[in-house]
Image (cartoon, rainbow over all chains, first blue to last red; front, side, top):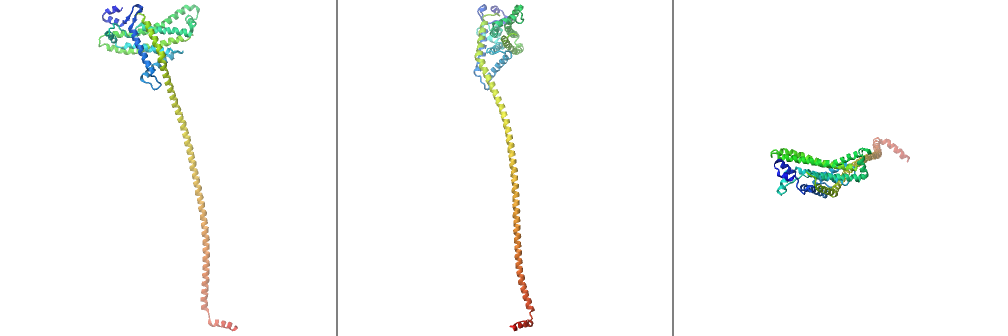
Length: 260
Length: 156
């Protein structure tokens, strides 16, 4: 796909070029270097920023950075406390990481669409896709991790026996309906990671596409269109990060609760 | 747009991030938040206590002021009573002294009168003798009185 796209010219070529990741390897063993690089950098940025704030955190009057970080922490903590009624050392930091990381993924969307790829091409990098959340691998990595945690907590809190019973006898408590229940629960559980990943991916991929289409328009038209879209996108990227976080909390709290 | 090994890389990165945040970031920040919350709560409680203390002190001050007022009015009334007593006493003393003086004066006057009367009596007696002398001088009749004297002399 990459090679053909490179050959094409015009609008289609431009868009395909922008949607092609920088990759090495073949088939399943392909690595999207840009996704890995940017997500690692953004993750590092997030961790560095919060770690620094944590190191300097005092109970005295907080500085600007500490204030901001505390705001985030309290915001996430409120969300967790609202939906999650169990006790877990993991879930709040997990939620914070998801929110910040996904937000930073999405935030890359607001950089001028050609800026980083242009810098990359100067440095000899042919393809550069800067928004990690437009890569299905990134969003599925998050959602599959969350899914693993859902299964893990289901087994840990309810035990294998109760969890199996829930899968077999919920929602219809009759032995005849066991296959139906199993199917229903299977779909339900499977839908969680898929919807999480595809929602985020779809929103950001579409948003990025719109930016590309705007970039194809004449120069004088671009600010008129890309400014409102970018402003609207500030809402979208925050909202998507927030939705991902809240759904993660909700799914994990469901895993902690006994079926009725 | 294919799922590939990048997914695994991303999952590892994610796990590392979550682990790091869970281990080094969240507890520290949360502890600071809790500590500040406690501090603020303590501060508010202290302020509340200070306010209550102030109310109590105000009440106490009011009580003290009232006592002082009562005491001072007591003292004033006592002083007034004492002053009245003193005035009354001096009035009495003065009256007694006056009476005494009057009595003494009256006695003196009586004495003077008596004295004057005595002098006058003496003077009247002198005057009476003088007058009697005068009368005797004027009334003496030598012949007649000679006869008497002669008679007496004859008898001798």
